Image 1 (cartoon, helix red, strand yellow):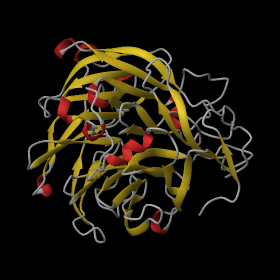
Image 2 (tube, helix red, strand yellow):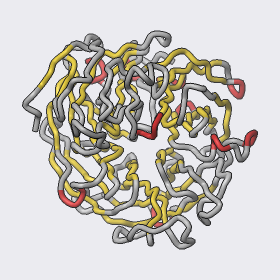
Image 3 (cartoon, one colour):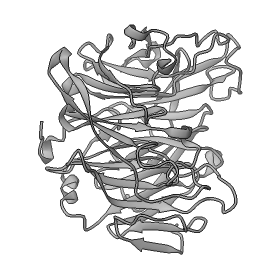
Image 4 (tube, one colour):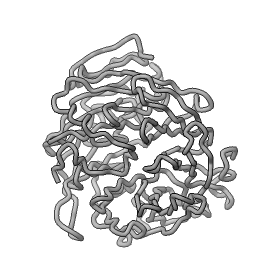
Length: 449
C-alpha cells in the first residue's frame, strides 16, 4: 500500500517541513516497493528492531514478534505472529535459523507470554531474555527465559564455538528501590546459550565495563553494543560514553578506550566501520520522542559522530572526524533523531543506511570521514497536523539487495535503491542471515582493512 501523494526530489534536498500528514517524499534514487501494515494481535503495538535468516525477516515489537517470508521482497508475506508482550522486543536469530531471542525491558508478573505488567520494585517481577525455537517458522515454541539485571533493553548475538553463543545484554536505569536493578550497574549481563540445549541458557558473567569510573551517573549501563567477532572487537554506546571493547575472551570483555562529547545527550548505538577501522556512534537526543531535526537544535546534536580507531592492541583509541545529521528540516509534530542503521557492503566506499524516526530513512556516504553526504532518503509526513504523535522508522537495514525499515506505526516498509552509482555492488554480497549488531567484513566486495 503506497500513499497516493508522492513528492520526488533530489538527494540533497534540504527542506521537507511542509509535508502533509502521511505524505511521502523520497529522493529519485530510492523507491518504496512494499508496505505491510501492523496487523493481528500486534496491530496496536510499537514496532521495533529486526533480524533476518534466509528468506525470513523477524520484526520485534512491544507486544511480540512477526515473522515474514521475504523470498519475494516486493511481496512480503506474514508467516506467523508471536503474541508475547514486553518492551521493547529487540530480536536476534541464530545462524542455523533455529533459535530466536527477544529482549524484555519492562517488569512483568512472570516470564510467560501471558504475563501482565508489574513493578520494578517488586522482587518477583521478571524481565530479561526470551528464547524461542523457530525450527518450524510457522509454529514457534517458547523454550526458555533468562532473568537479567535491569532487564534487557537490547542484546547482541556473539558467536562462540560451534556449540555455543553468547548474548551481550545491555540495560540501564538502576535504582536503589529496584531489587533486580541496583546501582551503580556499570556492567552488562552475558547469557551463555548452548545451541543444542537452549533450555540450559544462563547468565555466566556480569563484567564491569567502567572500572575506572565506577558509579558515574553518566555510565549506569549500556544501551547498545555492536561486535566484530573476526577482529575480536566491539563498540558500545553507554549512555554518557562511547567505548571500544576487546572481546578476545567473549565471556570476559574489557574496555580499551572511551570518549565523551558535550554535543551528545545519550549515546544510543554504535556501528563498527568495515574492518574495524572506526565507529559511528549515534546520539538519541530527546529519547526518540522529541522534534530535534530542526534549525533550533542544529546539525551537531541528535546526530551521528564518526570516529577512526587509531593505534594498535591495548593502545587503540578513538579519534573524532565529523558529525552527520540529515539535511532535511522536520516539523515540530515529528519526533526525529539518529537511530538504528548499518553499513551497506559497497565496494570501495563507506555507505550507511539509517533510521531517523519521522525523519525517515537516510543513506549517506562517509568515505571522506570529514565530509559525510546524504545520497538517498525516504520519509513520510507527520502522523498529525496538530500535535506530535510518536512514529517513524525505528530501524533501517540492508539485506540482500533491499532496505527494510521497521516503522513504529506503519509496519514494515521495503525500499529499493536504483540508479545510485556504485551502490549496486552491494547486491553481490549475499548474506545467509543478519543480526545487524553482529558485523562481518565485506570481503566479497573489497575489504579495505
